[in-house]
Length: 504
Image 1: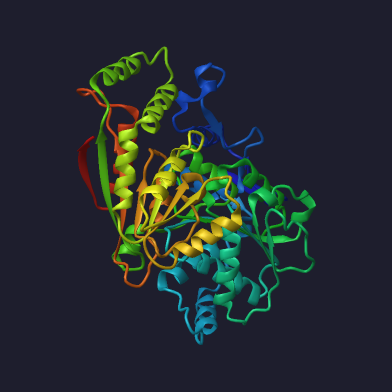
Image 2: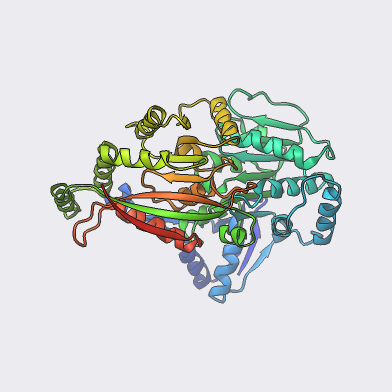
């Protein structure tokens, strides 16, 4: 079987094959989405839940080059890909890169890259398209800077574009890079986010939010030679796909995230299709074992407060799955949570008794559950300073709260998962509360990562996970099942946890 990279560099086109070979490849690149049975279109029987990663012209997205090799190896199919050197830099000199790092940081007053940080740059530079799972506190920003610095200093690429999910990360990255650079590289950097959309001329680096970059004309991306997507698990979002697709002339395209998706899943293949294969996996467990991150201890607090009659009614509703969608039943349970006064008081009392600084993450903005917690803590806890953030909070105010959390003790930041589960860096954080249920592995792991930042004198971070137990007999409610899914994540990621039963 023979294939070639298409002239635009975006696809691998299989052009010589037997019927058996192409059928096996088509079968292997046809995947069902996760939880396909629950998709509305599947329920209406207008879609079978499958996504094909090979088109009618036998083209596969360039980022799936390694997946194609894996499929061919698995089924003993011979494969020759012409032009693969567009993806793999066979001339990359690893020794030259390591020497550059040693020389660049030799006289730096603060920064000395860790071995794993340098090692992780190697496959990103060698395999020009890739994704890397690098846990929170591993130093993603430094890794990206080293890749940019080497390419810029050795004149191996042109304009560098870094895509981030929010304005906080733009400012944070710009400040960190200035510290890492220590005045050595004379690059020009532009930040692009809401309110700063003017394009500067002759810039070397652009760091922008996907919300702003997606509005640029396609021609704006013509001189981008390297694109880096931070928090790359968002790559499934249509706007980020569009940005990557607009970068027609890239030599390097890579993404980093603390939480990549399960290998082989449709969602994981979608990310790889746009960026490339997974080449690094630096886990939270590795960081904690080697004292590169703060150790995490999790308390799972199962709350039992619903009366028997209400439990029986919920169990009856769950037994009518054919009539009532699971999402509606879940919404009923969530409403029981936000409307229960005893639960609210217990959670607030728990938060108020903690020492040092805490982050309280909530889900329900519409019914103002987080706002209720904030109001209660403000009124009842006179020894604590309490802040509140949701999607309506101005960026400048969020930045001010983050800065104030870094100093002193007895401060509580009540924030929505959507705003503070990803990409926010607060070193002076000792407790993280999950006060409402979330099942998404990405969000759970990213939220735990908020507490992993190292700080002098901080030996551990406590995660307090409240789980609502409305079970009756062996019949379990949805929120309890969510809690059990989170415990599986804790176990898989090597986070120690202990369960507590509380009757309100």
